[in-house]
Length: 264
Image 1 (cartoon, helix red, strand yellow):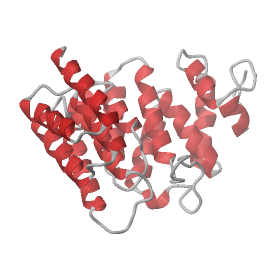
Image 2 (spheres, rainbow, N blue to C red; image 1 turned 90 degrees about the vertical axis):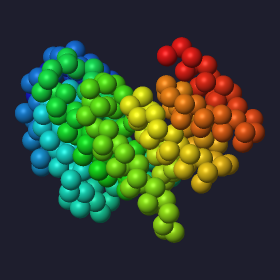
Image 3 (cartoon, rainbow, N blue to C red; image 1 turned 180 degrees about the horizontal axis):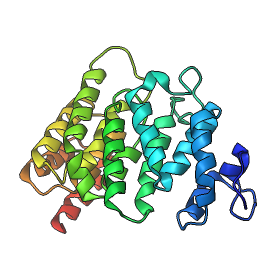
């Protein structure tokens, strides 16, 4: 199929012109064969309708193209200028929050399937840092945390930004105005990349969350899951504390986490 300026064809048709889901087209393109679409996707990214601009950025980022990462960094650095600012184009199903940045984080995660090159890793680090800078204001769910642990070098490079994002989020949680999504859960998710790098820091933030949300099973289970990758006494002590909360649905997660540690 030749490159087209039609957004629907660019984003939702495969190399043979057959209609498909965005995710399937992206997966197909990870193996190559869609290079002729890049110029039109960049044009769409720069001048299309807000929804199509977002999807063009997603596709370009998934395929490891610098223009996708550059746009993520720009949007994250200047959120007041995102095309969908006045009217979000994608939403998180449960909270109804704007989920555009989660979608971009998922694209960043997919980019790790591309051939690993030094320049690509630098773009991944830069984009991750930019997204962590707005972590306390936007919905990300678990996906940004999971993308960080895809590469240990990336995780090490963004450790400072992870800690800054956690601390900024904790400050937001202490304010009376709700953010519209489960920010406490998002903080717990960032313990996933932090725990293997800094046992004491991970335990500290986990303890703050567990004391502030002693009955939030979703948050507590995420903490237990993250601390299962710990190696020090601090995170082990936190897991032992979680056992004392006597929450049936949590006990299994804590035991699995402790058992997993013994195999590290």
